[in-house]
Length: 277
Length: 317
Image (cartoon, rainbow over all chains, first blue to last red; front, side):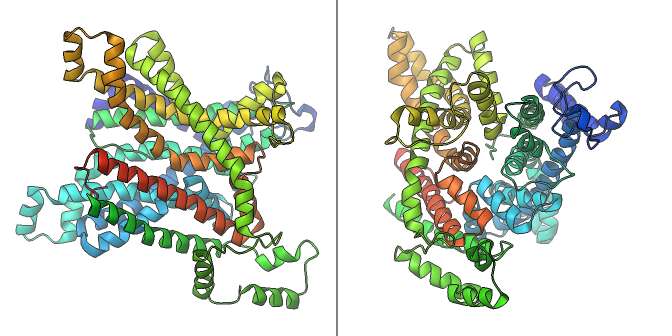
């Protein structure tokens, strides 16, 4: 709870946290509370402009755009959070081993990390999503894998700096094995940096997800992420501009909140190292 | 220093080899059948497909196929497209100018927009103009490139009717139309690149302006414009260049998106089409060119750093 207290002192970060809380709440139960259905089609009210009844208008099948945006936030957030969790676990594990063990293992792992980093994220995501096939789990995996090297790089440089500290030496002399040293000393000491990276990566994962969806390798109907909504809306851009606007605003709001939260956490946790994605 | 540079250059060889192996492996896991793609919509009997696959070498073990590909690649032969039988190298040479033009226009625009605004924000720190510009930059960082493009289409094509929503006209065909077709893609890409440049320039300038030597120059009575140009700007440029080069990966990713959105016949669009069409040689060729460029740019940046600051250790990246 210490982090929470520190975060509370930072206005933008705290507001972002509240906004994220609202978005998650909306995503989970918003449609139930408002009594709107993202899948209900109605041919009589196709492409209705925003107004009374349908605050954000309707789409080409007469579905309520507000309901679809809320549903889209749920799918987009789920994809970005799960994929970042995957990258966090796998990346941190690889990076920690690489940095802690050092030597040849490190050289080989660094080469692999650098090789994957050389690919533009969009290209890698596009290829992986095509290989794995569309569907939510595969998209999560594709974005997750593309984010692994960023966590690995960070964890590696942290592990190297922690390894050289005195308390590690004393831990070795007390007879702890490597696994115990890593779990008790190395990982806890890099946690702040990883937490900051997680927040920023979640933001970029959301952008990647919407971009991949827009390019046609996103989740499949009936599921629809914010990117899918924008892609579908683009066909009606001259007739129904709201289809191209509201899902984008939802993306923007979520990403800004996640970025602010990341910046706030960086200050709150006093992370000096430059974290990027 | 020389050994550090040589080490750096030698490092990129296994890196690129590994990249090509990863690419090759991933591409050959793509679902669908290249032979079927080649036979077209008409399709073919199982026998025809089998025969074609054999003649294309697709039935060989993957490492044999890879060895075949890489030995041709180092000789400069990137194979031919499955779909059009056009040599991959020719396709790349054909499409490269469009992409290069897009990148050059965007980077130039981004620098023209980003650096002055960043400086302005630093000089007017915590004033209204700083807040407004910093907010815009922050939104720019958080905005998916394709959505920015969509909003531009909405404003300049649908509402105002000033610019074409998509398509590309070569300069030779119609210079005016060519410029029109380039405006929205370049500006979209430029703005997403300008946002991090603004932020980086601002913080680099603030750092420099608070240094002792700036105080000294002020105390000596040097005029502020002189201080600015001679001391502050020059020292702030290094982090700004870092900001630009560190965007290269995202920038090239953006090219794929922007070319797809605006239907520009560049390398990015070509690549995306090839992925959906399972045109392996094209995917492989373009990916290698793109990734090699990224590796090369990073290599040059690293070498420049070694010159600027020999203390930068190569091992601690």
